[in-house]
Length: 416
Image 1 (cartoon, rainbow, N blue to C red):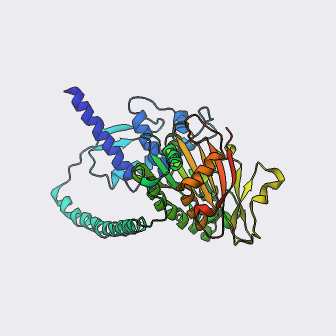
Image 2: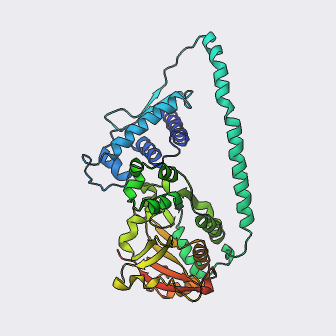
Image 3: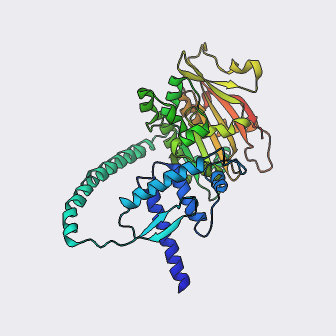
């Protein structure tokens, strides 16, 4: 019976951690959520070391210097404050409290001390409780309405026949997508942070992934206008449009998809999951760890406010990929790269394009059997016919998103 009781206690603690992680105090911070879950999974029965947390949760190297890098201590301090807030407010009725003691990262689960409140005091506080609940009804109704509208739009748009349904995918297309949706693994679609890209363009600076992940760049934003930009949570329309096309393309595999905003993504997920990274380096810094393996870069042209492709492995001929004086209308480009994830346990696809039309072209290209067969023929053969890790640049004719109007400009295996 002791084993059964122990299992019940473990399950109740797991559910408690899930409630805390989903609360308003942690739901908007992927780092704090991951930290809480990791500590509660690995530290209940013993001590958790700072270096291990930094490596497993925050993507630091296994032997990084904790004396000069205080990322774990800073986030642990923030987590302690959020836990205190949760159990004092929304979690005031939780019978068990989770704490992270100072000087240690192993969590402690303890029973809440029951405070006996006189009936008169309960009567006096009752109206306050009712007023506190009043906001929940309209807020939940609004959330339900937004969900219903977005779902209806998605259902209407999936009726569009421009993308090949999963049932009619050719063998080459199917081979590619089964590498992105591998076995029982989940696949994360990481939408770009459009506000971050705009901020960097206006400020004339480039942010490293470490600054983005730690939010340290926020401390350097003093201009009120720029501050208003970087705090917005918005993705580009091109990403959203690509999303519904992708769901059509992969069919039942879409049930294994987790759509996440770049600001909420984590190193932990990028090590263990398959992923599709949308945007460019400025709007989606999660592409940064893969730059050492690829030669294609996207350069921002301030005069025109556009991005154009550059081949960093082509020396002085790099900008020849961009032809602003094309006689066939303005050309668009999209790049496609397939690589191993950070943990070597899954695959990552990176998609970048010059705009909405080029993103549409990328979606149609990835679902067109003849286009993907041409791409596959340009890569080395493999024993099982799967795609080797590669990068490709596709040029789109004018505003056309048709695969037959696309030309593969670069097609090669990646390094590393």
